[in-house]
Length: 203
Image (cartoon, rainbow, N blue to C red; front, side):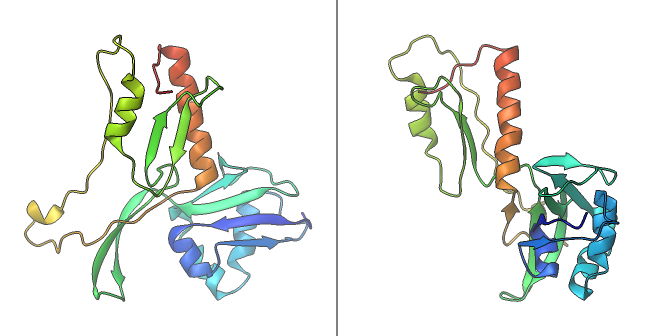
């Protein structure tokens, strides 16, 4: 390889490595994702800790899911993140158990609306700010009488203590994602939906 790679780390991998992003120039022997992981694991104790259990780590190359056999090229962006799973971890600030959900394909809040003004394309918004569902519905239905139904999903957090009295309950939920990859993946889903069905979207 001997050429720079941009390497991103998410969730607990970032915590263990100590940085969210770094640029490295691996030796010529690094040709695949598997080679890169082996190289990183030998860099220092922090990287070794991050890649200790490689079965729990997933990878993307240039914002697309990649296998360990994927060939790397100079200038590639390589991202490492946990497999989607629930895990319990102690929060030192509050001295209690906090449940985290780590994933790369879920935004903090995701809204598919549109089309964007003047483009005819669906609008995808991945943001930390709250969505006003009523405002989006009003935008969608303004001046129209041909809409007979709306599809909307709003997720809430259920407390497992209600079903398991031995559980300590959920105190906080952290949802992290890979922004560029999230937007690209949702865009593909939107494109596929528009090809399969007649999709009415808000202006």
